[in-house]
Length: 146
Image (tube, rainbow, N blue to C red; front, side, top):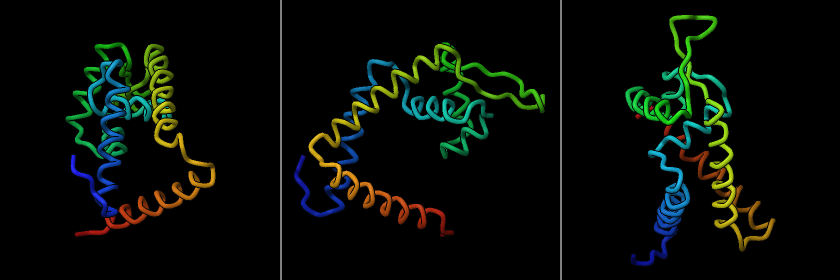
């Protein structure tokens, strides 16, 4: 791959290399793309409807349905009728799913350590501030109409 020296080119390369490394680390877990974020979301928020998952992850409900079906087959999630409103089903982690979360968190911790291994605490804090500003800039433009 040709080296980029412009800021945006380097940023794209960082995103690409991070993606490749993350996929390598996750490959042993035999997950389909998007399943790791969904599992982490369920571990943070508890039971969610498929519609809520789609909204949180900004993906199509039909994609969520496929992902939930695959993860149910693996025993990572279950669906149950909502106690308060029986019209809705919610997706929950199983015990197996919770064990899986521990594996995911270890992998993401390893990835974080690999990414920032030669940064001082001060450099990490400065980079964190820069990344937050980039995120906030993009968020602002994404939320605008048009």
